[in-house]
Amino acid sequence: MKNIIDEGRKFPLPLSSADTAFAADAISAAVKKTEANLAKFTGLFPDDTTIGNVYHHREPQLPGQSKGGNFGWTTSFWTGILWLSYELSGEEKFRKAAEEQVESFYKRIVEKEDCEHHDLGFLYTLSCVSAYKLTGSEKGREAALLAADHLMGRYFEKARIIQAWGNLDDPLQRGRIIIDCLMNLPLLYWASEETGISKYREAAAAHAENALKCIVREDASTFHTFFFDPETGAAKFGKTHQGYGDGSCWARGQAWGVYGFPLSFLYTDNPEFMAMAEKLANYFLNRTPEDGVVYWDLVFSDADGEEKDSSASAIAACGLLEMAKHAENEESRQYFQHAGTIILKNLYEKYSTAKIPESNALLLHSVYAKPENLGVDEASLWGDYFYLEGLARLKKDWKPYW
Ligand code: GLY
Image (cartoon, rainbow, N blue to C red; front, side):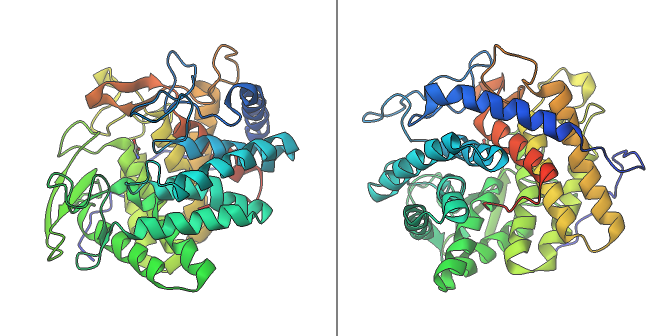
């Protein structure tokens, strides 16, 4: 493994056990919001982010797409919120709404509507693998296996990577991976478990190993994206897409690593994934300001006047809580568990909509893509999802959909 500097644990944590009592109130507020959203978003999907903290029906981007339709990479976060609400409340109305969306995801993969990208993992894990795990849905299982097969079409055997975006012959995207893809790999690991066919797991593990070697820099920060030569597998160069610069560390990218590497550990038992997750987590936590929530790029601090990305902190909190389950000693377990809990407590108290009736979102102040001025200081579907997943992890022995 390349020599990565670990800064160590500098994030200040109270010595006593972090208090999780707030989780019940936070969940109750979030589930109530979700219930109120059912009328507008049953069978239809919210947009990626809010406008003025309010979700509207998804806006078509291409001919053939309809308002509120199932396209883009984020629709499953809404379905995932429905599944979490079902688990947390036991209310059948959430299950029914989620099941209706499973039909939509089934149609999407069968008809290959907006499926030419790597985000099939996000899309089918939270909508259909979840349906199968929670209710035994055969339709969910079939759709998720079809999605895993389609995702395998983006795997370059020689380079052992999954290309993120664009056609495989697009000269601008060919051989490019992005750190977010770590969250798409659980679909492939699951497909191997489910079918007994090893090729999915082998591809996922190989991709994660390459990400570990190349997308992580020597100081344990990460590139958002990295180019490989798909013919030889040679590592080329890192480049940002949503971060401040090629040399800076996009906060949500780092968070995808903090959660994504432990998920690969979960399925492979390769200790290098956990060791790397810990280094990435230290880098992230050491740049987390006093209010517990990071700026959209970790290059920024309180003096810079930049926006926070609450979604990055929600994702990292889920990663930390997952890491706590696999920690090699009690001290590490407590550290990860406390750090994740403290972030979620801050999100609830200072960033959630629990006391903001005008908003139909769960978590305010995230940033989609600052360089494109997209969804800046708005709520995002993924921020809402990971906030609720984190709370579920505090409330019960939550079994990951991932
Ligand atoms: N996966 C895209 C993003 O995090 O914005």
